[in-house]
Amino acid sequence: MKLTNKNNLPQVFERFRKRNPYVMGDADYSVTTLIDSPRISHLKKVNHDRITEDISDQIMSILGTAVHAILENGAGHLDIVEKRMFAKVGDKVVTGQIDLMSPLPDGTGYILSDYKTTSAFSLMSEPKGKESWHQQLNMYAEIAEANGFNIKGLEVIAVLRDWSLSGTKRSNKYPKSAIQTVSIPMWGLVKTNHYMHERVEAHVSEKVPECSANERWERLGVYAVHTVATPGSAKAAAFGDGHISKRALRLFETRRDADKYVRDEEKKQKNMTKEFAIVQRPSTQIRCESYCSVSEYCEQWKEIKQNQGEKND
Image (cartoon, rainbow, N blue to C red; front, side, top):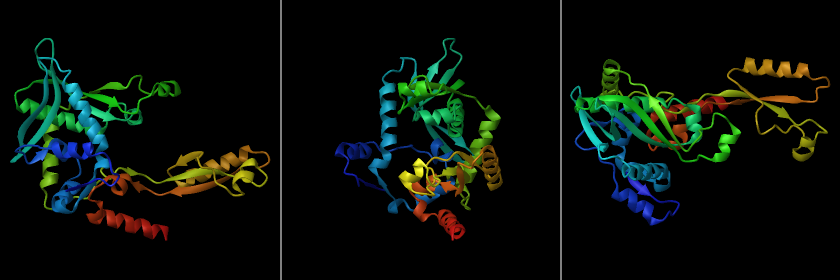
């Protein structure tokens, strides 16, 4: 993979990435690879020498690395930090680097913690943690257990990179501080073992599976109801008759529901002072469109774009 610097960022960023390559040791797969798309993993291997990635796209990763390095210095003398461990899953070796394992006061085991640098909105959307966090930490626990550590609890220590005090005043659901601890339920040996074998099988399969909707970060299409500037209104004077409001009034999964909403709103009006427009927003594949380094080599993505183009014709 070739590293580029299209935005001419200071050389310190480029040197940092080159001096700190990811190394997973003598293993077939890392935990983070297993929980991700087998298709993306396969395409990265096949097209390794053709892939380019810009340093500006790695800034979030750099921030995460910085947080890990700083918090590592705050560990207690009995804590186990940044420990890479390995375990066999079938005939494959899986590895994971655990951020922190803190011993319980009674000496019966450890709390396994993982640092995540994320956004306040992301945590508000999923206050119990992302599905990938649950998958990752339970796999870490299984690997730690295989190496002789008794794991009694799991948690994510989330550092909210965009937290602001004003956010707490706008919504009571906004995180109260820039650092939040999210407890992650433990699956148990049977479920975790089954999941790990399932993920290894998906990655070793000769028939590369397509990316799921979750792996594509799909945002489903909706029908958006907007107001329309009517002749003589202030909005019409500013933007012209027929101007559609920038912000939608409501979003609906089906056209039928959108139509019903418009009819109901029109019935509430005495003199039809408001007009409405329904705009169909197509499904979007956020990862494929903006965040996948191998999308240009992916036949699935090409097919999705072709199908979207045919629908728009």
